[in-house]
Length: 221
Length: 221
DNA sequence: GCATTATTTTGCATGATCCGCAAGAGTCCG
DNA sequence: CGGACTCTTGCGGATCATGCAAAATAATGC
Picture 1 (cartoon, each protein chain N blue to C red):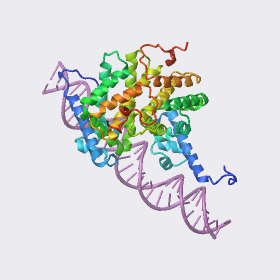
Picture 2: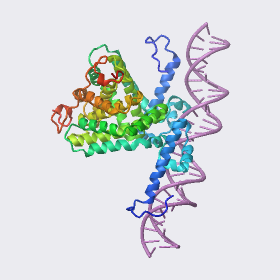
Picture 3: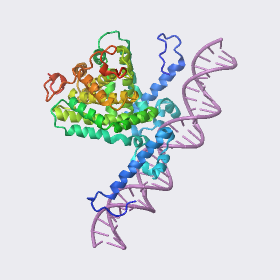
Picture 4: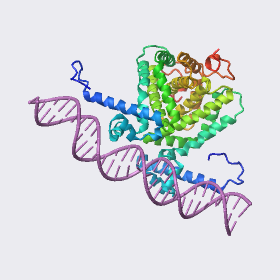
């Protein structure tokens, strides 16, 4: 299934290509219809018609409408994990992830708009939430093992890798959430991500009120 | 069973009582059958028979089998949040939560075994996962607002409350996970929780190998 | 106690989803 | 071109979610 095909176009296989295309078509159809009518008003038959496939094929690719809708924004996160996995830096994992994520946020603002659209969808269609969070947890477990491998710790017995992975995720997700909820400009996001990672790396210093303007968006100095 | 009408009850209502009882009965039936046969082999009709109610009543209380199964272990977490909300300490939120949780782990290890059993169920029945993580996220959001209220920050614009809430959750969940995955004795859990919170508060110091024996369980020397 | 009201439980029906199965269409490889 | 393999499709059965109205049960007033 999700095997990484050879990097050369040599023998990619027309079959695999068509499979990916129909998958994308179904996912795109689900996304479009959901944005138009709301997920509970969309049936599998509707998605099938929109994607020019049979209803059975839709169920063949996705276990539920929700997964079809959410399949659109899955690729981005995987790329980040690959980059982290491929990095040869000796810095602490949190530093590597901070640089990776803030850089990505700076260079791919368009992708992030897609993520924001997703967040919007999720707010309007609560039934999407469980599936989305579940996907996040899967990524988190993957990141946990990557951190363990990188630092020579054991994800099954050590606290460290799991805690670091969770911290990175919360930093990224919290930044995205605040960025999206407050309609901040694209330029603010990288800084927000770095602020979040700094707060995490500093051990969450006790705040009362707003002593640190860098950690809030209410005073855009 | 009930003989005569209560003489000391301040109108609690027999109705409300029966409602709670049937709810518990359904949830318990769902849990029992799922542990026996696996959730995909359990139908709503089965649960209804086991709980001595009609199938329609099951759907009346829970939107899905999954919710019925998970309804069992919901109360514990709410108590912790209430304790945190009621605390008048001026310590940082993470310190308060650390003490609250390690104390709870020391005094109520049995309840936490129940939580561990749930985690086991989730591993064997993947369809439970979305519903469970969704519940966790709801608790996390609640904790986020409690932290914001306690520290005078704004959960919608500040990174701090969301990051702190996430950190506390990951510390607790990671401790629990490692505790039950390695079949550690009850006495180890409070210490594990405190280690996790210390690691979090220290900003996840970079480890390679196992320099800190307090952060691992592999060498109980 | 008895009747009235309010709430819960239940059965029934409908629309939708999930999944296994086998036939048809398309692709791959020699 | 032809066999082997894979994907698509239609069908059928089992399950599920939900609205609706009637039966059952608890609460309230007389």
